[in-house]
Length: 275
Image 1 (cartoon, rainbow, N blue to C red):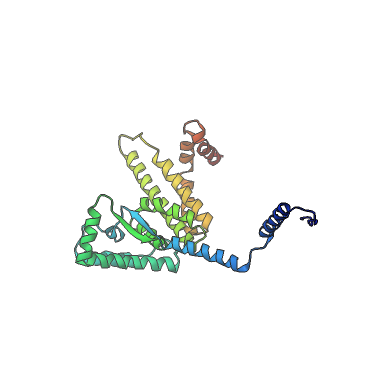
Image 2: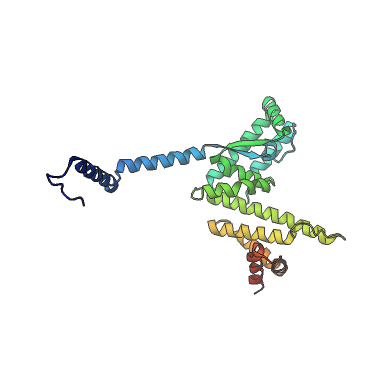
């Protein structure tokens, strides 16, 4: 508390005391409801601005969204691809908003490719050095779902985790998490297929990481993501069964990793599986 100034106090001292008193009022004065509402409104506006900003999905065009080869121009083929995509059952129980976004995206893709003028522009984009699909941030969950369905797991894993980190509290976050988990499973499946081809051939490639190690780690990432967001319970059971079948071989691969701090946690994981 500031002491009351006596009549003998000089003017500069009074001026300094008054300044300090005003500073103290500014510090201790509670934030008004109106100011709080303005702050909340500003944050909501920034969040809405982020969701309505554009993002480019690299290496993807409307041809990929419908599962078509680039340059496909047969109208019947394009319509059939669209009908197959729309009529196919999704691998996860996505929300109504995500399914609506998926449907709108597919409809836009087929309309673009059936329009000769727009299809020509799309073809030029597909033939360019850096093709890409521009969409709103708010539509990205639907885009990721479609990309995972047509086998573009690399694009899903390149964009999905970053979106999920920035929008972890979004209502679409569980859908994106399930989609990313499926993409991890797709990549694991390809790695296991490569392992079978290696085992069936006379020469086994020693270059790069082991396909089994990569596959099992992807499966664990998928399971962890599903548990974190409480989604895809049936997929979690399937992953658990798969990992159980590969447990011994997976643990052997982990403990055989090079000694050093960069592999310490993975080798520890292998020991835990063995125990």
